[in-house]
Length: 254
Image (tube, rainbow, N blue to C red; front, side):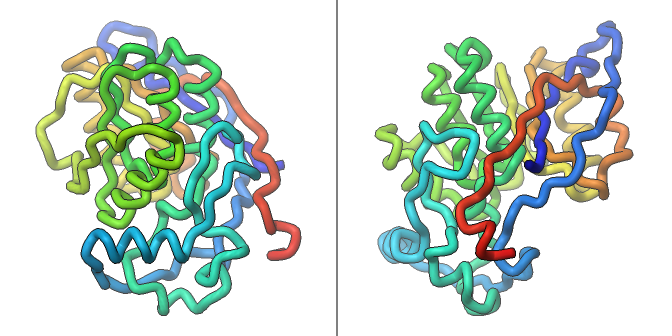
């Protein structure tokens, strides 16, 4: 089974001894249609049409993940666009349509350890499908902000909140790394350490959150090789590691 790990940015608090993680989590074979993400397109619909489009072209599932308690609209092998040519998708890259390994780890950890989020102001950075924000809500977070630069993701998050019987929480679709920081108690982010430049920006931004407000940071990541040597890892302490279940349809996709 592929593995994914959860890390805590403990070393970013001034005066605390830095902790190095001992072993990188290796090799996620997490399935994505077409084996990569070559999607293009900038089409937009008014919200009612977008809702209808997503409801037609995604499927509700709670299986094949670490969090069967959470129902999500995702791309699955039963969806047309799982098999269709990627360039026919009319919107930007649908990263929100896959429940990525780091997000699964974060969500599972919050559900198993509700005190981590209970009563806190939580930022879900790069929220995607919104699963980790939903897990924070289930764990009793007092306030939640989901952030994803894709407005289609915002609609998907809204639908997923409704699926799990929650009123949608605030969703920011601007690049929050370019904005003034708020006093979040907890920042969670999954699967974002795939690009050196982005990892650099996240490292600086997260350190400022911790040093300014004492924010707790949890990062879910499968240990992608492009950023496996980044300096951010020297300041992270591994909290837990999970084995991912087999995604639905993976045996038929090959």
